[in-house]
Amino acid sequence: MPEHDPLRFASGLSAKLATRSRHVCAFLGAGVARACGLPDIGQLQERVLSGLKSDEKRAFARELKDRNLEQALSRLRRIATLLSGDQVIDGLTSEQAVALDKAVCQVIVNELNIKAKTNLTPVYHFAAWAGRARYRLPVEVFTVNYDLLLETALENRKVPYFDGFVGTLKARFHTELVEGGTGPDDECVPPFFVRLWKLHGSVNWAWEDQQILRLGQPVSEGLAAAIYPSDTKYEESRRVPFVVLQDRLRRALQQSETMVIIAGYSFSDEHLNELIFDAASRRERSEFLAFCYSSIPDSLSSLALTTPNLQVVSGDEAILGGVRGTWKAPAESAPNLWEEGELALRDFRNLAAYLVRSTAREAEAEGVFREQIKVRGAVSG
Image (cartoon, rainbow, N blue to C red; front, side):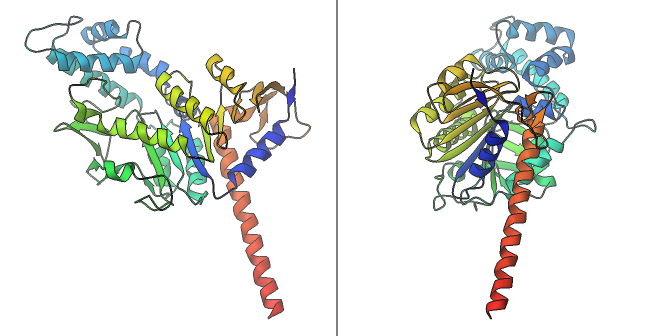
């Protein structure tokens, strides 16, 4: 089997990210939360069941049969919408489905609380990189996570960002600001604002008067957090942010010469996979780079083998330029690049550290260059 050079791969990544004219996107999944000490979607499902009361636990366990957490929540909301009076589905009336939805959401909010034991260093590094990137086009960060890790990191590092909502206490979603084009002349918000698009909602999104608001803190007990788009067609107003944000993802991925970094994502969402795979197949001048913490999913590897601009890396192997091969152990290794015989960048903690260090080197180089210009100007004068 062919061998890939990790040092060459890492230096190539830095060079690509140094091109200021590029459109750079990051797509982050539950692996990012886990890298910071929060549960991923599988762990969260287990904790939800443990955190519910006995009768709620039995009812939600029925909804989870052959479904994941998000699918079960979506079913609860369909039941609540379709039924009236004493009608029952899965042993639940509409009122009971609403109550169970709120109970599940409250457990999720509690479990995703950023506590003292949470390690925020990886997202701090990522936020520092995004804030110093200074691309001509805004950095766009798409995530399926509900937690407030990214918001906390961006604010801690004083990085301005826009998430589609305007306001402080009860911010409202502004579709027209999100639907603007991705070009520099089409954006209403300045390009130095990082775009943070939460595709599956957030623990501080709440439904009120048939619309979703972003609160200044996680939703309180008794409210259902807007943490997953209900697929019911009967209340389209409740789907507005999710539909608009997924369309933003589609348009961002389809923009030519885009660099997409995918980390912590398991490729288990077929709809999102379709958007990513379609863009990779259609936009040959764009580059898609997926970091897999464990093994490479079959659906991803089959496409990467025939799509050279889709590169996939894991700890022990990679598919680069359509060639699958193992990693060759480097004679010398940069920090966060190679650990225990594997490519360390597969872990979001090391990837974020590598990104922020690469921008630091670029900033230092730019400073030296500017000083040289000043010295030469003084000499010539």
